[in-house]
Structures are given as C-alpha cells and as structure tokens.
Image 1 (cartoon, rainbow, N blue to C red):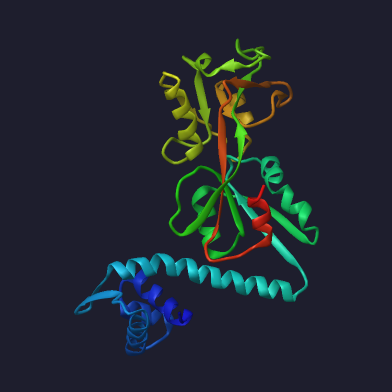
Image 2 (cartoon, helix red, strand yellow):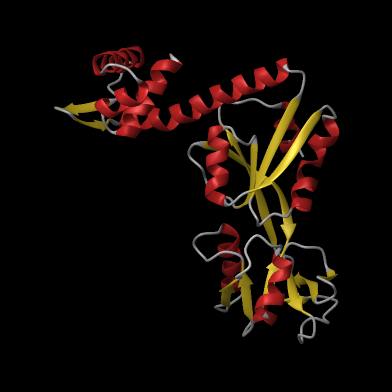
Length: 286
C-alpha cells in the first residue's frame, strides 16, 4: 500500500472534507481526489460515499481508517528506530499510569533491562488518555496500565499481576491486623480512590471486588493527584486499596496490610500494531 496515499486518505477522513484536507496537505483538491480514487482502485473497494460535497466513510473506509492510523504510526516508529540505530544507540521509553508505581514498572521491565545492556530506558508517568495517544504517535514505545480493556488501534497483553493490600491510617482499628484483613472488614469504611469510577479501570476493579464480596463501598476521590496512593489515608482519613508492599510507610503514619483471600490486579502492556521489537518480545515472554 502506498503510504503517501494512505496518509492523504486519513487526512480526508479526519477532516470530513476534501477541501479542508487539501488545504492541510497543501495540495489541489483535484490532485487529492485523484490520489484517493487511485487508492480505492488499488484496494478494489470504495472508501467514501460521495453526495455532492458531502462525504461519508463506507464500511471499507471505516476499516481502513482504523487500520491505516496504526500502519502510519508503525511506519513513523520504524523510521525513528532506523535513525536511532544509525546514530549508534537505542532508547526505549515506557509510559505508565499513576496506578502503577515506578518501582512496579521497573520490576516488570527488568528482564529486558538485564537482557539488553546497551539499551537505555526512560519511565514516564502519564494519565490514561495521554498514554494511549503517546503510543499511537510513537512518543513512547510501550504503555503499562491497570486494565484488560481492548484497544482497537493498539496491541495488548497482560504482562503481570500485583496483589491488592489495604493502606490504613495508623491508629485505625484495622491498622494493627498484622496477619491481614478480609475484604468484608471494609464494610462501613470509607475508601480513597485516585480517580472517579468510570474513568479508571483500577477504581472500577476495586469497587467491583467490594461488590462481589456483598457490599456497596463508600468512597471518595483523593484530592492530591499524582502522589502514591499510600499517601491518600493522610489527607482523607480513609483506607486506600493499593499494591504497595506490607508494613509501615509514610513515616509510620500509614500501615499496609494484606487483604485475604488474595486479590490480584493485572498490569496490561500496550504497543503499536505492525511493529517488531526484541525488547518488547523479552518483556512479553516473562
């Protein structure tokens, strides 16, 4: 497939108009229309329904827009990798949501760090919407998040699991339960979340675990964003469900205890489709 024509088709589809797309691409409308028609001929399928100046995507056009964006992103990434290799170094950027700590991310990518000593790595914390956009435009090589949701334009796989624990304010009646607490011990307690339900898989996962245990949790959203969730009990007085290691933390003002039976939350890796990477293959192989 001609990537130049594919880029022009995507521009038309996103602009919703040949006139606007031609202006963006600095082409004549006639040249752009001719290029898209040639692409339709190459693929043997109409991509737009044309009604005067009004255009709408055909089912084939919808498919090509979805797949074409991913293919163009992969082409840009391949070019970046070639230029990086030519300069004598390889750099890998891993983005992650605040639901995963830097320590957890390092543990997940450590097999690749060990296997590729000549590769440098950068970890970057990002919010979910920015994270997905950064994978698509090639700003990051791999995204890690809490979740198992499908992503039409990206490839995905579960890369690991972390155990859920309770971060409890010191002095709370449950804080001294060194052997751990049951999730039903949280009945009547207020939980601190880092993001509202519906906007975070991790929040939905935690609330769903409570509901499966037979109760509707009371919750609030932490007013300090970007901080480790083990800090949430300090500003809210509530209990936070976290993936931190058990024991005292935050200057002994918070205690992290196990929740039994064990509750495991996944970490999902996301990357550009149509790309190959030995570093990524090492991560996915465990």
